[in-house]
Length: 271
Image (cartoon, rainbow, N blue to C red; front, side, top):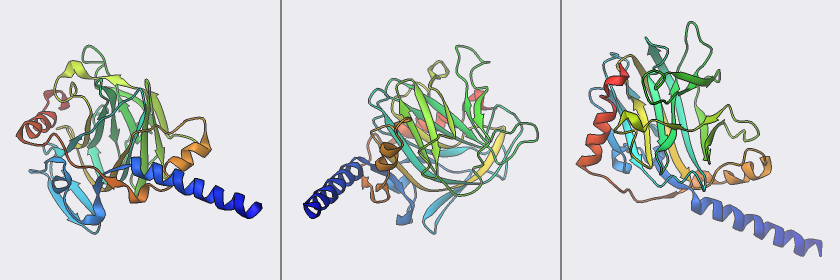
């Protein structure tokens, strides 16, 4: 009887793992040694530099704060149902002149345009934050000023999972799903216009003329389910097999999207 139960339990776990795996969409796989552009992303890399090698992409704007660029993609992001954007990232270097700007930013906007922008710092002379959120607001300020943050350092290679559910987000690191390193409320940046009024939008890159960075990214994936903040067992199971995620065909590509991304990295507010 125990043998049968063990077999059934094993089959159940295998089925559950397969279901999770099938739901995880591979958005960028560095092991292919191809660029973001060749994997369905819209890229604005010059005048910054891009190197694709050894299982990832390194994007660098450290030559000058005036350099900007990055990568964007559109995927369905339903915050009511919940979703998790996973990414493997290492901030190689970063410098900023303004406490409200970062050389590396990521933006995630849900289907109703509510989302979060996070900035990544290597260090700061006055503030302990290393990863922090941008404020929203009807006017500037407070829109795009320094909000909640964490002292967790991004200078090593880290696996992050940004989970969104309802009105909140949680950022997890290195597979520790017990405690997020940063949490907060989603924001509405749409008064700024493009690209912040675009639904289902994801961006990684440098979108300011007040900072610069060099970053290496080896993986980005999306799971249409949030990491439960209160159930550690479910959290651990959700990402147990995402290392072999299923790719999703690219959508919404073309010159129009490139123009939108170009607009992002040349917004006047980013000075």
